[in-house]
Image 1: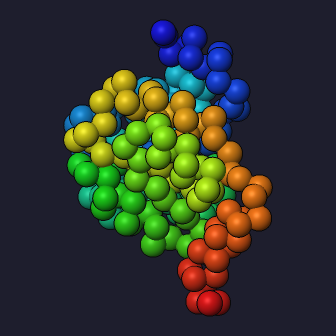
Image 2 (image 1 turned 120 degrees about the vertical axis):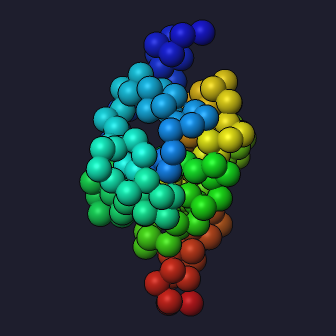
Amino acid sequence: MTIAARALRIPWSAMRISLAADERTGVADAVTGELRARGHDVMLHGALAEGERPDWAWSCEAAARDVADGRADQAVVCCWTGTGASIAANKVAGVRAALCGDAQTADGARRWNDANVLALSLRTTSRARLEEIFDAWFAGAPSADADDVANVEHVGAIEGGRR
């Protein structure tokens, strides 16, 4: 199925997506292409942007700050394992980054955790898996279940020192 055909069957709207990668390897360039093919406005950081520091801590922080400061609706952050990318993004107040290696995890992260930053491994994410993850991520929405909402609110309280 082509990217255009997939985009027609999945009911999401175009968003501003901040994207960071610490190197242009693996699926780094495919992430950019796939986001744009889905109609999203993509802001680039790290190795994907001219003149920016490419290191994972700096580039992923920049993408996460775009979300926290309202310049982006969501972000995708990438490094070799995805772990450092998710750690750096999660240090920014208001960000809930989830490292997702498959569609089921992406769906759960959006539903139960109201995740607003997707972290990906440049090493283990294949092109096919990337498309499945994006399908689930962008089709997902936060749960309205009281327990799920309470958990997300508690995470915010922990972050703000209000425990």
